[in-house]
Image 1 (tube, helix red, strand yellow):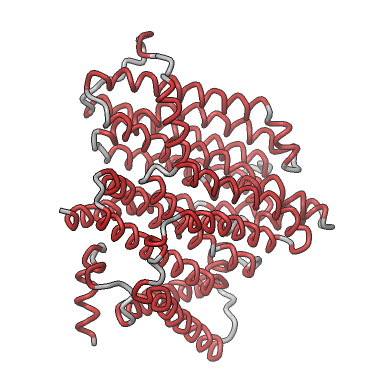
Image 2: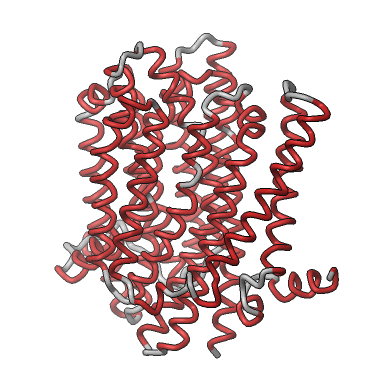
Length: 529
């Protein structure tokens, strides 16, 4: 039974990864023409305000719907409507407060960011928080009934609409002489329009497929939540949202400190804003790298919770260690691989190689965030919420303290190091508070050394290819050629890493059988020997 559940869990991870990957690809791809059309300073304007949108969508897409689906599933049919009414009231009140704060204090927020011209974009993006209640309640209720397709569809369509409006705004800068701040305002309006389309899709799906209707029009539906619901909502739903939006919060901290610190360090305002725009090139790369890790956490968490609840200690330990091994392997490979191809992917996407060193350091936040997410899911499965909250806020504190100091002396490279330091602090906190048995995932069967050997093979393969190309053909000055070299480098990296995983026996045969397509991969690799 345990083996079947694990296999189903991994298959679920594939489906979730695919849906999330499409959305993340869209979220990353549009940044390329946006930056190409409006330049690094225009990109800076958008990225300064983007964390507010990202936090709103994190609440509406992951943390709160996941909590609602879990909470509603625990109730019987008679209590379901009453519970949903209380949750709707609470979420609506929360979203109104967040909207009010962001809209009313848009000027002081923009002032603290060092650019009062951002006020308009902040006011526009604040309205996205008003979409949290319908997005959250519909998604959570549908997921609780295992009606998952509408959720995935609404997320993808919302991204298509949003990206379309953003690209129109960028085109307006190029052909209609819009200012970079007007482009930012229209781009944020696209987020609201896309959210409205997602609400329409979810409403239609709920009316058609849900067994329980939500009578929003009835006064009796809107009930003040009981203390138990409020506490669980803030503790459990807030925790998932906190870690799903962890990097967004770090990015928001950069929005407040980075430009100001660069300016205080002697840079002009224009220079500081352009440098921030170059630094923000790393955000979509990290987002893509984290897709698999976040999907794994969404898929593993319910099963780990079930094992912990039913006291299946042996199975729970195996699943936890497999989860961490897989997360570390994928995260480290993604970080090292991106760092190695950075000169080519940066030139391909953004027309120059500015910030290669800064971005190469920044992408290591992928592996750190992935492992942090893994430990957080394991802690949450055992209802260890305090440790997770303490670790998160310790990391945020480190980021706030180090960012202005390191940026002042090191420029944007300091911001990258501050992000890695914040994530490392949170990870160390988790490791310190986790059981010795789970922490042994790194040392059992010499997993750590085997994985590092595999990473070494991948590194040598990619670097050898690029060295040989440079030796015979010289420096790359063409974007199309840089694209080809990026794709070839990624292909060489994936092939060499996968081969090394099998050769060095990083995963046991039992573990391979639980992984998606693991059995097929193992057979093919063994045939080649």
